[in-house]
Amino acid sequence: MSLKRFYSRTDAWLRGLPRGPYAVFIGISAGLGWLAVSLLLGAEFPYAGAFTIAIVLFTLELVTGSWQNSAE
Image (cartoon, rainbow, N blue to C red):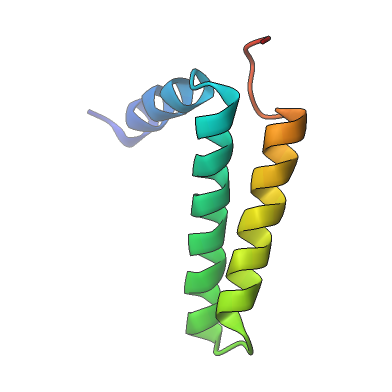
């Protein structure tokens, strides 16, 4: 399976999720990404920043649903 096909299938599956689980996935992945980069760069308060970005993106996605194609 090629990487592009894997990405497309994963993206389609994620966008097919209901708004709540999709928002949780977005929040967790953003928080983990922020934490990884913060730890690599030696930033101050990496856990607070990761938690904050996770909560903000979770809330925005839950309220707006801007990244999903399906109408609910």
